[in-house]
Every structure is written in structure tokens, then in C-alpha cells.
Length: 284
Ligand code: ADP
Ligand code: MG
Image (cartoon, rainbow, N blue to C red; front, side):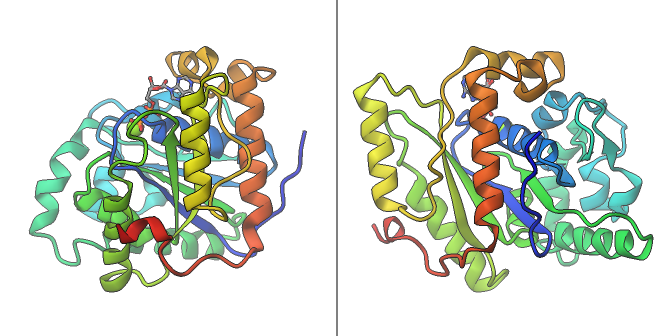
């Protein structure tokens, strides 16, 4: 298979969009799997109480399984909760269980409540190095749609934000709010955070509307938007119910090829200088 370029250091992404159903989870698991198929070592942190990323990766996440909840609330080391994804070699997963739904409230009274995931990730990276384990190339954090303390923890733990945008009406609605929230996080909690990557999803190139939305996104975010876009594909939406990503469920499908292309582009852009100012669309 393809061999993707290794990044100079571990790249940590939060996959974010304040809208639900735009393809955050689908993008997290398929980009992660594609990077792993490209020969890279990848960790997915499921930070959404729904646990959809865990389901899609075939990871045990029934109530009581050690999970993101334990990491964020109890301070359990990631090394003690991480699971290997059977379907995808080189892919590790911190699952989310329903316990995480209480975390938003429990976090409020915790010390360093915004930094808990970041501290856990940093400790895990040092622990791996001490153990002589292979360095992680990518960490992808899947988030709930709301901007609560769980998402804030992800924004503080990450350096890069990847925004999936669904090519439909109102796609850009809410985006300027997301960007100003990222700006706030950068100002107060994480000066390194920036939107490095935008991925157009559920793209149906036959419709004028999808093309118009895509053009508008590219106009606003010329350097951030990947050239690869993800088509609307039944195979992509079927894969999770088999505990698989589309890459193993139907490797030759348009969706699988598109996610491989997108991941390769992400990997290739690794060493490009990134934008440090918020894109113009935030200024509305
Ligand atoms: P989010 O995490 O933003 O809520 P999901 O990734 O769960 O969004 O996607 C929402 C729904 O859309 C899911 O049922 C998923 O299977 C489906 N979906 C996502 N991407 C595609 C696609 N490219 N083609 C078809 N269906 C998709
Ligand atoms: Mg989701």
C-alpha cells in the first residue's frame, strides 16, 4: 500500500464542528484508519459520550470499560485505557463510554479542568518514549458537537483543528462562531491552536448547490481546504454498523479512495507552515 510521510513530531488534531451530523466522527475514524494504512502510528481519542467513533472502530465501549472518562475525570493514564483496533493495525483507540456524558458537569469543579486531556496526552507521549515504544505520528480527537468542557479539553490538547464541512445549505452557518471560539481558546488556553485543515464531506458534485458551497469554502479558506473531498457514499455510512471503516469494508469504493487521498494530503502538508491568524470568515 501507500506509504505516507512521517511528521517531524506527533501531530495532534481535534476534529470539530459545532453542528451535529456533518461527518466529524466519520472523518475521524476514516482519516485515522487511512493514516494507519499509510504506515503511520495513530491514536484516536473518542471524546464524545455517544461513543460513535469507538463503535465504528469495533472497540469495546460498554459502560464500565476504562475510557476517556477515566482519563479526564480520574486521571487514569492513557496507557491503561487504550485499546488496539483489531481491524486496523497500528491504530490505537481510547474509547468513550456513556459515563462520559456526566463529565461535563463533573469537570466544572475539577482542578485545571481545561488541561486534563492535554496533561494525559503529554504524559502518555513521554511514557511511550520511556518505554521505547514507537512514536505516535497522529492523534485525532473526536468531539461532541457542543462547545462544552469536553471540547475545550480537546482544543487545549490539540495543536491543529480539522473541520469537516458538509456541502449543503447553511454549511457555513455556525462556522464563524466556531472560529471565534477557537480564537478565544488560542488567546487564553492554547496559543498554538489553529485551523490547519478543512475537508468537504458528503459532496455530491452533480448538484449546483454542493459545488457552490464548495467554491465558497475554498474562497474563504484557500490554504486550509484539502483538494480531496469526500463524496456522499452509502458504503461510508454502512461501514460503522460492521465495526469497520470504509477502508476495510469496501477498499475499492469511492469513499475509501477519497479518504485515502485526503489522509495522504494531510500527511504531505505536514511540514508546510501553517496559518497563525484566523481566516477572514471569522471576522463577520
Ligand atoms: P458527526 O460526528 O458530525 O455527528 P457523523 O460522522 O456521525 O457526523 O455523520 C452523520 C451521519 O452521516 C452518519 O450516519 C454517517 O454514517 C453519515 N455520513 C457521514 N459521512 C458520509 C458520507 N460521505 N456519505 C454518506 N453518509 C455519510
Ligand atoms: Mg460524532
